[in-house]
Image (spheres, rainbow, N blue to C red):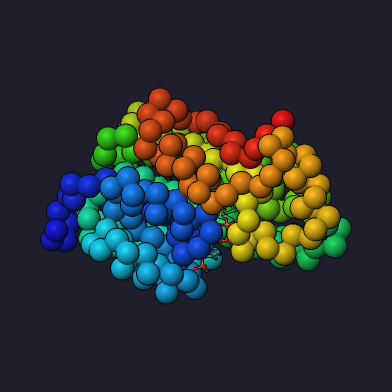
Length: 247
Ligand SMILES: NC(=O)c1ccc[n+]([C@@H]2O[C@H](COP(=O)([O-])OP(=O)(O)OC[C@H]3O[C@@H](n4cnc5c(N)ncnc54)[C@H](OP(=O)(O)O)[C@@H]3O)[C@@H](O)[C@H]2O)c1
């Protein structure tokens, strides 16, 4: 496919595709036959492995959420390579915890800026291409913590709660263009992000989760692909994939 010609396959942009949940989502979209622009910050090697496993279908894209110029540059690479974007999965994010009274204000705002500003910046850059397609979709990976809260998570939970208001407003803005906007709210999933969660918190979360266990990357990825590809009458919704933790 030459540059700027519209590719025939549906095309997705998955942020934070180098590991964890984002890597799982990228693989599931590729298995569904989409081509995927897979972003990484430090995990270039992992994304290169993905590209080797799915020849011609993966575009590795460096994207640092803290770089204000990063979003337009990333989206431009997709336009140049494939000329279309049908699905935007805003997955990359950071967690940094601590009780509010003890957290350094700059660290607190750093979480907000990294997670929330990048959500708006990447969505803004992607909207023109999304609006050109059919069944275009934005999925924001939020968190159940944005709904139920968690001690030590005021900054992170604020970004995840904000994602819901952001998505519902954007769903209203983009419905005339046929672009759906939804939030996926996972419960606790074993990834690098949760590796340092202490045993006491793990026991508490597991005991509060109706299904009595943590979710897997695979389960969250399937829910993300459902929202992106199959949920053609869903917009402005929040899909909890949390084993019942939020009930
Ligand atoms: N794990 C859970 O229990 C859980 C629960 C609810 C919601 N979530 C949400 O699910 C999403 C993925 O979480 P995860 O558990 O898979 O996390 P993870 O294992 O820590 O992976 C984070 C991903 O985000 C990328 N990333 C981190 N900081 C970045 C930055 N400044 N710029 C660009 N990319 C950055 C990383 O890229 P590199 O590796 O290339 O640096 C990596 O691909 C997050 O939004 C998280 O809040 C997770």
